[in-house]
Length: 65
Image (tube, rainbow, N blue to C red):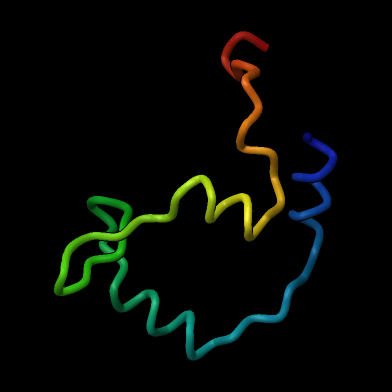
């Protein structure tokens, strides 16, 4: 839903700076994932849903819109 996306972009959430600085230490730009000793980790669609409440199960093809 585009209205939900617009609403999310207008929010000003509090930032937890120590967590952001640690997360950026492990971020690997070439693969767009976090690299740890046990291997890479990237956000999943479930993570996106839990953080943003966006409907990731929509079957609408965004290219054909």
